[in-house]
Length: 127
Image 1 (tube, helix red, strand yellow):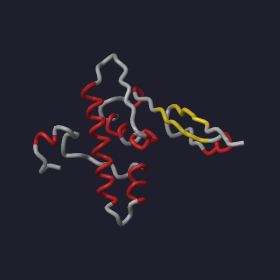
Image 2 (cartoon, one colour):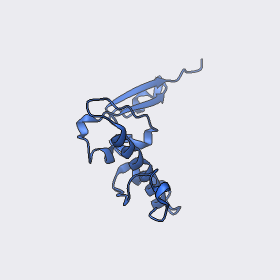
Image 3 (cartoon, one colour):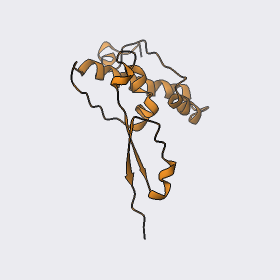
Image 4 (tube, one colour):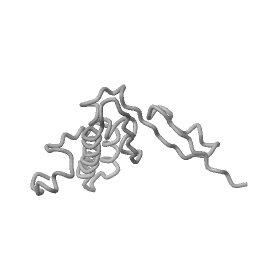
């Protein structure tokens, strides 16, 4: 990334990028890609997370609510983007919302401990 032009680098989080490979979401990526450049996939995910956190910090204003909508994996279990934000914002100032799509029969399989709030979208069961 350091070899990219200054213009290209301006679109990503400041370098050098620190990647916490102990985060469970990043470990999941590494394990799912074992032998297939898993470390590069973790670094790619971390770059996206760090860049989104950088933009949130850059464009948020004191005393205002900043709403950021992202795919679940970027903030799952308060990791990803959140891990980069908490270096600058107290964790208690950040709320995460997870959406789970499930059926009434499988509602007990939803992990309600991943985020601060969980919205349940119930799928209609065929009759």
